[in-house]
Image 1: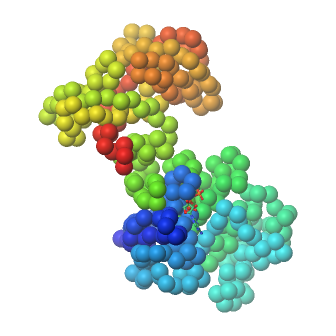
Image 2 (image 1 turned 90 degrees about the vertical axis):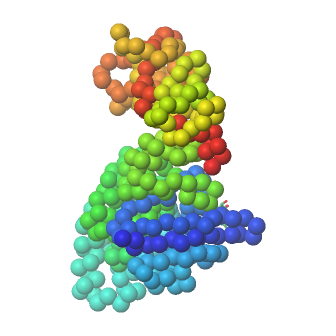
Image 3 (image 1 turned 135 degrees about the vertical axis):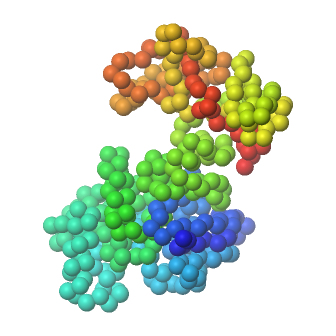
Length: 356
Ligand code: ATP
């Protein structure tokens, strides 16, 4: 059931429309990410939900109550920003205590809540330290502890991990997700990091130009992008132009370069121009005896630990191929290889969707 409703939210700065009629229904306890490139309106949307920016149009409803005109502190929301903005002159415990004192929580209960919360974010024993005596990752945890100590009904996260190094960020993704599940807090994360969105979210809302262009589970958003923007923003992808040359009841034939591929029909007209997409991990280097679709020449080969990334020059242009590391090195740069895929792994979008 919808817990947080964003209903036709817009924000205009002078002539510039930063957010355009954005609507989204979020369930209680759901973790949803607003994912998109810089300037697409993610932060503005989050700031409107938090109450720091007034919407030009639209409503924000939490648990049936219209909070659009409420002051931020009356909304029962916890917020963690990119710059954690901890109080430098206060200890960790006092930073976490701040919101509880503001809400008039009695001291014994407060002490108990601080201890519980610091344990949850794995900061027990550091309560007397000052922010300057903490690592970046620990400071980030204090900011999170401060936001969740009040047990907010909604948690808003604006790129909270962007100051952490890659390894710490990966650990925090998993930890933060576990904490969010444990507390059951409805959470909205703003990020331009697709891995972050894929790892933590129940659903991802892909934003582009002030609008949501697609909402779905991480797997859906990744496997079935609805526009070229969504397909290229969420993960690496190979794109090839094609034309529909024949349709059958359940599938259609598409011509790409000098070959024909068979894809699900989805109501396409003969002669229409399409874009054909395939993820790098859905392409294989054909093994001996396996029929390949095309031949190509390896131009780049990079080892990434868990997998290899190859670029193969072919009649379809330069194809990016991701191969799992099986302990055996794949063909080297300069070698000619057969390239194979299953047509069911191709994603086809009509050329009109390209302008969406
Ligand atoms: P980033 O990932 O870079 O933070 P974002 O998707 O969060 O980007 P927003 O900060 O929401 O983007 O900004 C959306 C657009 O609105 C941008 O073009 C920005 O320049 C503009 N904008 C934001 N705040 C203001 C403001 N106070 N006055 C004028 N324009 C603004």
